Length: 406
Image (cartoon, rainbow, N blue to C red; front, top):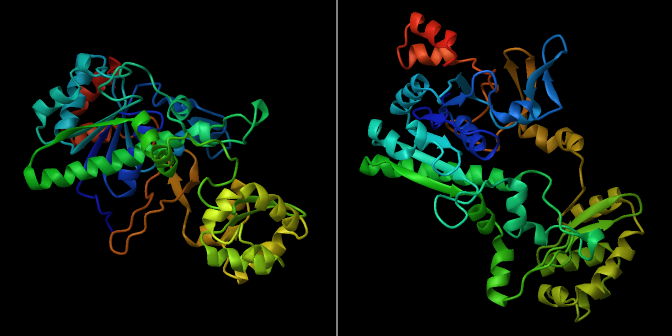
C-alpha cells in the first residue's frame, strides 16, 4: 500500500543530519526523495565511522552507520553542480519536484543558480526549504552552525547535566537533538507550505535555523524564565516543575520515578511504606514538593536503597505509579514493546544484503509509512533518475560520466 505522500517528489540537496532527517521523514511517508551527492565523495556522514556497514563478505564498506541513520528510502544521484552541466541537471530535477531541501550557508547556492529565486523561475510552485545554523537574516546569518555549538548557544546545555562546579558542569544531549528537531520542524513546515500550495497554487521559501529551533524547544524551561525572570539551573535528572520526577539508586541499580500528580504520589508513598510522607504538609501537593525538594529527595533516596530495581518496578507498576528502568541501547531493542511496535526493521541493501534499521514511529491505519527501501549506495540511482525522469539518453550519460559531471 502506498504511503500518504506517494504523490510528492523531493529534491534533497542537504547533507549531514538536519536536512537529511527531513528528507528521510518525507521518504518514510512515501515521497520520492532524490538525494544529490558529490561524485566520488557523497554526503559527509558516509565517512563518519566506525562503525561502517559490512558487505556480504564481512568487509567494511564506505558507508558509516551514521549515514544509514538518516538516509533510508532515498535515491542517490551523483552530480557535480559546481559545473554548468551539473547545474543544468539539478535545475531540471527541481522543475519536476515539489520540494527542495538544502542546508548550504546563506547565499551558498546562488553562485550556482540553485537558490530559491533561481529555481522559482523554472518551477514557480516549488517549496524551497533552507536549513542553516542561524537563518537567512540577523547578525549571525553568515556563521556556520553545528548541533553541539547550538546546544550551548541556545541554552540547552545550561539546563543539562549535574548541578555544581566543574565536575558537574554543563552537558550536551547524547544525540544531535537540535539537528533532529530542526529536521522535524522542516518536515512540518514544508508539508504546511505544500498544503497551502494546493489551495493557492503558490510555492514559497521556508527558512529554518538551528538556533531558532533550539530556543523554541526549550519548552517549559523557556517559559519558566519568561514568567519568573530567573534563568533555570541544571538539576541533573530532576525536573524543574515536578517532584519526585527523577532517577533514584536502588540496592542493585537505578530506577526512574515519574510522579505526575498528587494521587500518584500518595500511591507511591503507600508502596514505599512511607504513608507519612503523603500527609506531611511540606509534601502534600506538587507545588509543596517543588518548594521542599531538598528535604524530600534525601528521604526518598534512603527508601529506594532498601529494595532492588525489579522489586520497585513490579510494585510501582501494580500500583499504577509511572516508573521504569534506564536501558542500554541493546536493552531498548530487546524490549518486547519496542519489538511489538516494529521499531527495528530489516531491509535488503544492495551490497550488504539484509540489514537492520530503525523503524518509523509514524503508524497509519490506511496508508502505512515505513522504510521499504534501504539507504542508497553512492550514485546508485543516477542513471535511473536521469533516464526516467529527465529523459537523458545513454550517450549523454556516458559523456557526463567521462567528464566527471556525474
